[in-house]
Image (cartoon, rainbow, N blue to C red; front, side, top):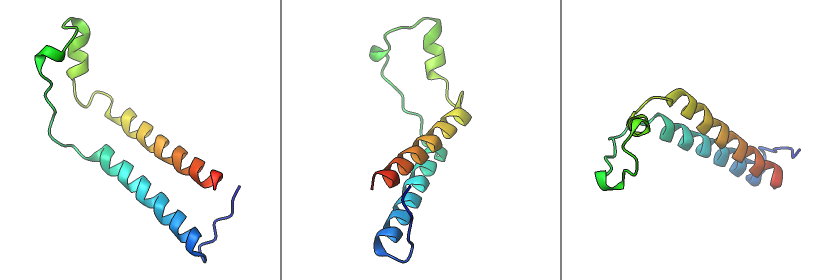
Length: 82
């Protein structure tokens, strides 16, 4: 595992980059923007499963955890590679 030296420019850049990546992922996860409406011609299946696709907020907690996990794992992999 690499030691993170906050006294060097490279160490500061890595720490700041990691914080920016995590804050960007959290902002994207928590931001509740307008719902994107898809044209009806692109819905391939209009049966029972189609209604579950259009529900919003169904797994919001899980999506936040997955987004944070993805961000942390990619940040960790980036730190380990360098």
